[in-house]
Length: 396
Ligand SMILES: [Zn+2]
Ligand SMILES: [Zn+2]
Image (tube, rainbow, N blue to C red; front, side, top):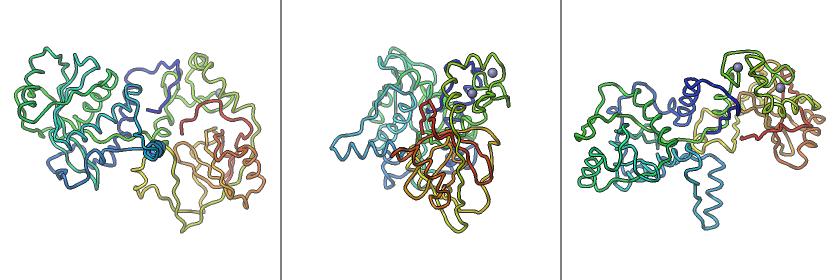
């Protein structure tokens, strides 16, 4: 999903499960669309066919995916999302396909592995609207695994083949099935307990739940999900950091040494460089601004909460003396510098700090953006390690 864990991590299962829950909630933007939990779907408005087709309303792309799609369109190709490579991408596509099939009148699904031998049954009971253009699917699902020689499966198949047109066989890897079930189980507990829907006999044991369209995680989501998570190896709450670089936390010497091979390149890139102080300007009160990152979803651009107003107050120092990664964008007039969580987002004007600007320009050597380690050294000052790039893949 974009959240990386050290290769030697020993995070306990319940902690990983908690993190997955949080990540899935970011991806389905639950807090944005569901105002009150438990949710009573009978209070929602039905999705009407005169609204957008669901295949469009369930589309959640980030900037990068949208650009790839446009480029493919303009060259007369269809942008194909590679399936069965990443279960999170598969999950996003599956939920879209529930919408796509609903548009065509299909409601029942058999979600199974490529051999179609064992899988789960799911029926979209209804689609409601939870925002201007935002659908929510109420679904019944059979968590019990069913095989093609299973009686229950055959009765479900017969019923929906006869009554509702057809049943869709949806291929899904085991990982995707597990992720979908996890999401369904999470949301199932968020419905008012008395809520139910008419069922055919074979659906008697099915659970009821809901699904929202799934977004790729934004840079801000990943920043939040990876912030202050304790020891990177075992998850124990700790404030002890690598004493050389202060960019990562460990609870003990054992955890630190088991991560050394992974951490060494980063540690060196932080400690061996030359640090330059940059003076940033405030955006004046009365001015409004927002920044767009290639991993932001197109959907989030419509969100007025992302627009910020200028202030002369220095931005809060949330990290003390700790080192953190920043992205620096240069455009000829100023530098835009921000961290992954977008908690710090500052401008260095060419006219305001000509020396700092020139140093960054040199480090960029023609590129529009670079990633570097930084630390806060004053109300309006950041120190940035300009000569050494982080030796890790930066996914934002
Ligand atoms: Zn530890
Ligand atoms: Zn270190």
